[in-house]
Length: 120
Image 1: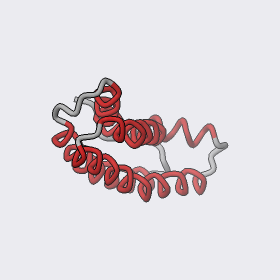
Image 2: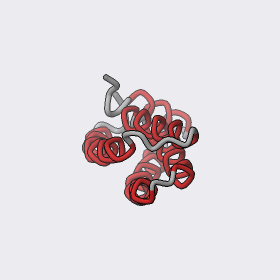
Image 3: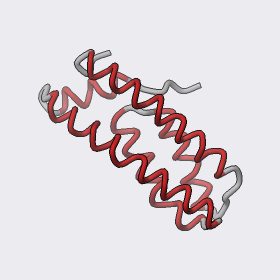
């Protein structure tokens, strides 16, 4: 199983921005604010049984999750993206639900990482 949060990714991000913890805080807050809307778009695509509608939000959630080290959520979003690009909605509802549950875990892990100064 993939970890919920790869703290090394956050440490590398912090190093890449010259140790600017405020920048990383802002990036993480934006991620946490934007992710529920992406999940809403994924749910709408599932409800409409529309794989084309799923591609963009799944891709964006995957990419944004990788940026902050949310590896498990990125993996779920990657499968949703790949399947939707192939025109499949197989198990999309279950994966969307898993993504929502994972986001709750990610938020808790990110809060803990912030308390540790974004370091492992």
